[in-house]
Image 1 (cartoon, rainbow, N blue to C red):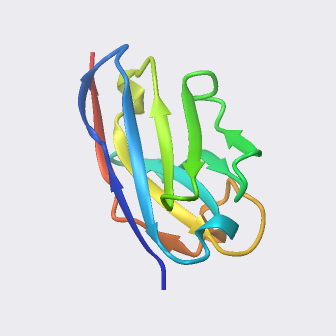
Image 2: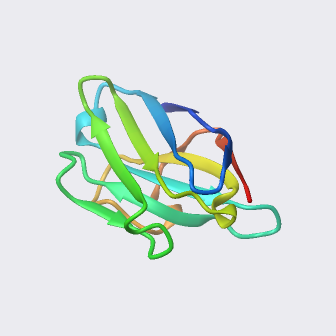
Length: 124
């Protein structure tokens, strides 16, 4: 069983930045693909970004490309999401997810474990 704990959310003005962190309680973190997803009120959960177990391969949703950066520190069992130039439409509950087998995926059902989420609110 893998536990994921997100942090770093909060209230920020449009144009500002936040960095989300997700700590994973697993001994196999360095071989686990990780992803970030988000869900706004009344909307479906959507893919944000994903990273391979080495950190060399990343993938982003078109809506965040160029503004968000996903990275990981395997020594700390932590994955990060640096969010810059935030917009009001980025307001959502952000979830960290772990996929034990396979490449990073944009599909939520392919992830095995999920955190509880951290709220990001961007005021315009």
